[in-house]
Image (tube, rainbow, N blue to C red; front, side):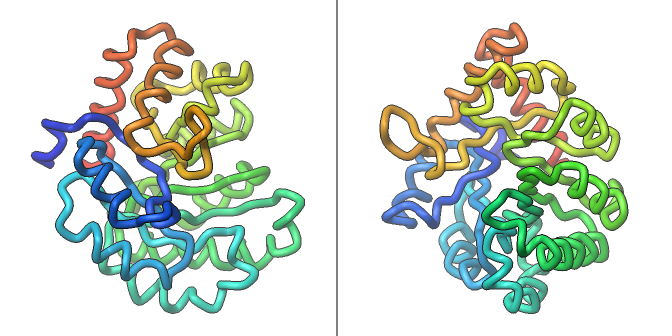
Length: 251
């Protein structure tokens, strides 16, 4: 983990392959020294993501099957399983019980259970997990299928309740916080309730914006500033805490 000594920030959930120029987006994150986890939404996207990050110092690719795409892409689960030995990182995976995706929730559950079981069998995987309107169900499945000693979950853009967050902490989960979460009273209240040693940062770019353009990994400093303001820490102290948390997660 020698690369962590010169890190410029942590973006633990970003979709670099959804920017107009994927290769250039990876290069910008690398040049900015942002430890970036670039997630994929389908197993078919893995190979190109893996190729572009195989030799990078700061950018890592995660193998995903996004719950919002499960209705059309569940057939790619065997491909996901074949690629799993190639990476430590898994994502974006999880459940989405929002109105647009509720009808596929049963299939989502089947896929997510298989993902958790395969990760538990492999051991040592780090998962970035989507839990829109489904935090209790996601936590129930993690508890049932991924023991803490077999893998670690980072809950991305978590919007569950504070009691859900407490349950997640007890299960060993981390939380990746983006700038959008720091801009609402509810988000700031949730951040204040989290243990400081479980907080990471993310952008979820390009699905978030900064000054009218898609967020990039270098914009994660906005999340750091928002977290610091939410919990009463100077931004540089908050940044050091996030880096320490990343070290703990990767250890």
